[in-house]
Image (cartoon, rainbow, N blue to C red; front, side, top):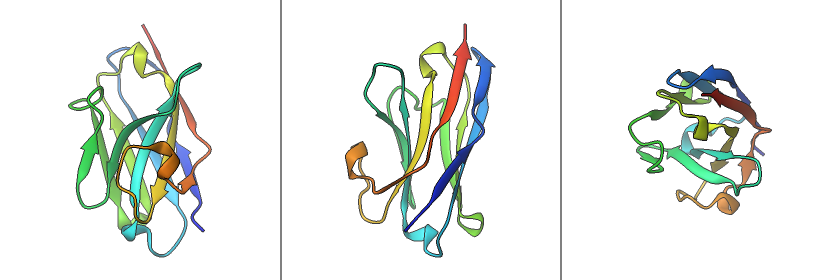
Length: 120
């Protein structure tokens, strides 16, 4: 069982930055694919980025967001720069031992989410 706890969300003006963190329990953190998803009101949950040994980004955030991980701290991060109002959503951390794709239903473990609001 893996437990994930996100932090770092908040309110920021357009063009600003935020860094989200996701702390994971468990002794095999380095073996897991870690991902960030987001869900805006009335919309489906969408893939943002994932990481294991390499990274992959959704086109809408590539060049603005950076996913990274610190295996010694069992933590994955999402650095978000040049934020836009359309980035407003609840951001979720997810993990999978075997799945490396972008389909949210294939990730096994989820955090509770953290709200990111970008004002114009």
